Length: 228
Ligand SMILES: Nc1ncnc2c1ncn2[C@@H]1O[C@H](COP(=O)(O)OP(=O)(O)OP(=O)(O)O)[C@@H](O)[C@H]1O
Image (cartoon, rainbow, N blue to C red; front, side, top):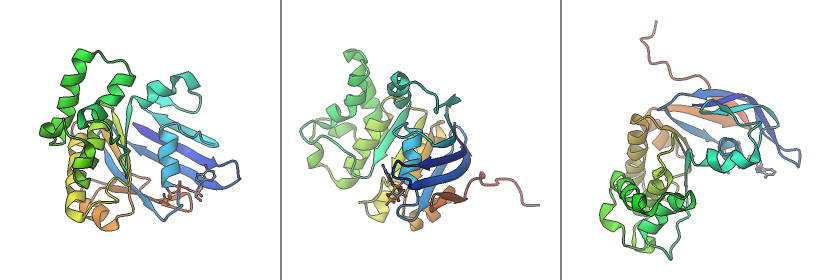
């Protein structure tokens, strides 16, 4: 579902943020992306969202080679990729319902479908009873759940998260991870950038590790077979 073939990203200031990165994430796979600060994690996510283009190599999402995707098709691609941020970027002058409805409104989903779809997303994250509240009235963990509901309301096949548990305590972080697991179980490909080594270790998932822009571990899927 997400494939990097020999991907290098050099920024305009000549800084090389990614070097010949190769990996392939299957449909429904859930993986972590880790590495020191400045290792290139956010750059890798930006290439998947087409916020940046590779300097060399190919990025393929859902069978589509992104390198040559015309600019006018970028909004269409982004509809297929849900993104969760550390600071969740919610609007505090709107209700929970309105925050989750936003991606549907901008893509022109008919008003009669919006209510049903927003409530389905809020139900998945356990916040059905909070739709009329303002995000400011919610705890940090609940706010992050609103961010996740907003990311999945379009039913994207790919879900990216950049430090989604950065501000949460270990218990809430584990809850958020279980939510991501549930999405992967229904076929969503989930890639989570995180510094939280304890959390990543606990989850026991495939982990892509970047070091100075090089993928030094996790490029190959975890072997699930019996060791020989
Ligand atoms: N737009 C840009 N122009 C020039 N250099 C950039 C740009 N964006 C990122 N970089 C550089 O590329 C390198 C990788 O940055 P990136 O944000 O991908 O790292 P990261 O692993 O996500 O770091 P962190 O964990 O601190 O968020 C860093 O040295 C950064 O300074």
